[in-house]
Length: 132
Image 1: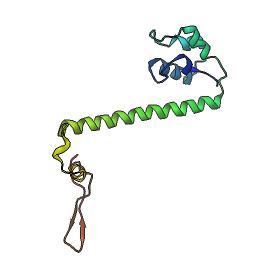
Image 2: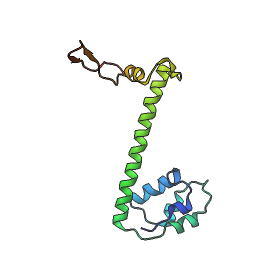
Image 3: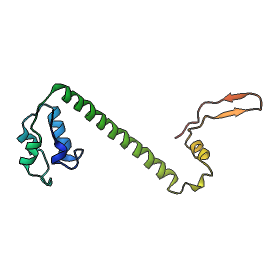
Image 4: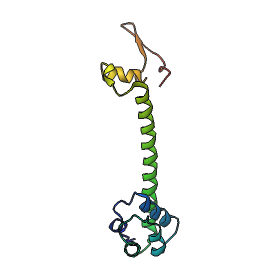
């Protein structure tokens, strides 16, 4: 598969690039049809995009493309989940993190530290605190 989508599109992870990649993975092989999926704001013409989409459709390369595209989509989902977690923490504590005197105090507030009690000789492991 010697396609050169990055020559025709500046951002292959944008709307047009993702639409073309998804169409390729669903079985579309016609360069003209694939070029028609590009957004009207793309600077290259549909003919130039179609020329960059002509090539061999080797099954092994298509398999690798599918694997990498699925990983990319999963990573986007993970990033969105992290963003949601960070936003919820920011809404609770605000943007002023100086109210925590150390990183340990902040991680304790997040309940990331185990709750350990000790009497000097023996440690008593307590279950994790409930909460965040």
